[in-house]
Length: 73
Image (cartoon, rainbow, N blue to C red):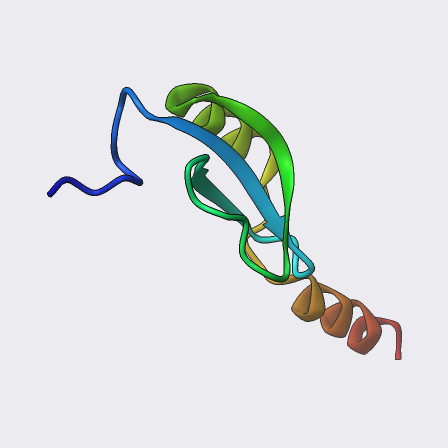
């Protein structure tokens, strides 16, 4: 069985969580709790391009906020 996350012909969405982390998600699977849709169903490459353009800081949001607070103190 092939990996549904790597199917070049699959249909995907891009999900994002509260920490600002993104995930490519096959649209046949239910969106897990704690995640929301950032890009509606489309082809895999469009999703990958969206993530590359959008997710420019890999640090979780809570870490960014903690670092900013520390820098301000």
